[in-house]
Amino acid sequence: VTPPPPSTPAPLPAQTLTRPDTTFFSKLIRTPNGQYIIGLTNPSATTTYLFVYEVASGTILRSRTVTGQSTVLAISPDGARFMAGFTLYDVSTLSILGQMNNANAPFPFTAAFNTRQNIGGSVFSPDGKTLWVNSSQANAVFVYSLPDLKSIGYVKVGHTPDWLTFTPDGKRLY
Figure 1: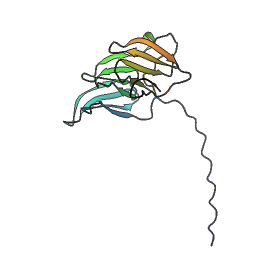
Figure 2: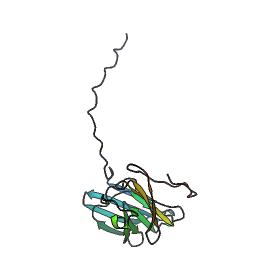
Figure 3: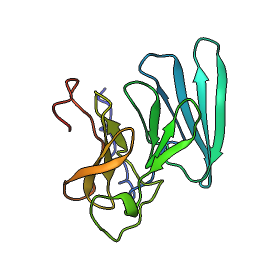
Figure 4: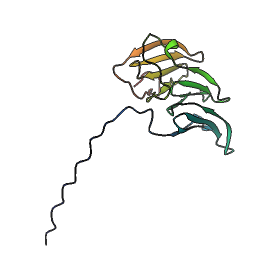
């Protein structure tokens, strides 16, 4: 007995893919020494909870509520600072150290910074001296010195740059 051939399934409906701020409502990132976990959750489009969890004690050491924050995270090599979207935070206090915006961009452009739309986020250089920030609105990657967050340059990269990573030696950025 020969089984009948499989039937052809109905085609899937057409999909329109838009560029979301992120499809995940929560993110975690650990400090390089593994002592802390930085957490971020967006229970709604207008509320975000940030927290610092200490691994050894199993407790949340500090937390704060912010409005409309991206869940794209990056942590500095020393674990002292982290980026959430376009906002730079201090791990020990959760205070805002700086935020990317049109005023501190290295060149003028008209598109507004959207704190929830930094998909590829940012990356700290392995030596912790610079911060490289993706800007899909400006089609560029901005470079800032640390800890002062002073603009020191940019690289125009074409249409909507995504995700950044350094080689371990810090000589190349992809």
